[in-house]
Image (tube, rainbow, N blue to C red; front, side, top):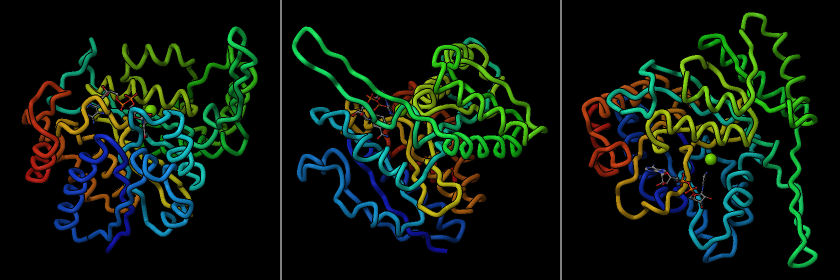
Length: 347
Ligand code: NAI
Ligand code: MG
């Protein structure tokens, strides 16, 4: 099989970790009998500096023709930081109806975790990815220097909540049968109590799945104090954004987290990217951790149906960290390429 993959490295460390992780995917293809028809797209903040926009008008039309989009991160210091989401990530996610942001959190062997408990954990944050707090509906009112206000509106629709909820409950059935939905409906009394109400209705269709609810403040503390209690964490766009960085942190580093922006119906391509951003503070030094990017590639292979290759890469990554080949953010000294090369040789 040959898969058509659109590669969007983006900016900063995206330009380093995407090529390194692609090498791993190509090696897996060779071993397991598939290949890629790849096309590179230079969209992002760098493109913006030259053309005044993050991507050309026909970009989404072009991306639509691919089986998947393999993405790094966008954003550069000096470029208005309200643009990366507005002009790229949120645009692709909404236009391609990638309403599930799938972000697993687990233990890597040989990686020190900043937690008190040594208990292993393995859960998935399912973040609603197309609406909620990120709809960018609002305004700034600035009549003069002394007075002003900013307003952002969150929008939660029945359709938007139901579809991600069904995904989470079905996912739980393939795991440990538990969904924890995370809101703050005690204070966001309109939007998030509506969310609760719709989730509870959906839950009745999955009587075999344990369903509980937590507020975001308690859930954040629980990620640190007892992460082993979670299986599927279902939450909103903003809360899922924050909780998944926390998920990265409890694994040992943001650089370990991978993600899939998934359109479960497959009527548009899904997009696979690490949970973190373009990390300008370490860009250009060849020290970025490529493991989150590699893990996103694993999710892409799963989405394409190449489960055997996906599992083999994960095992090779585990073998790599276990053997002490670690990047700088995990206390090691291996470069981006040294990590990906070690993963390939363990494959
Ligand atoms: P960030 O995630 O880029 O970096 C946060 C911290 O984590 C930094 O200290 C960075 O060095 C470290 N880090 C992140 N990934 C790493 C890796 N693979 N290996 C080692 N260390 C790593 O978040 P920040 O600094 O808030 O944002 C930087 C830029 O990225 C901004 O322009 C922001 O808008 C953009 N951004 C883009 C995203 C996307 O394209 N999906 C997501 C988040 C932020
Ligand atoms: Mg984020």
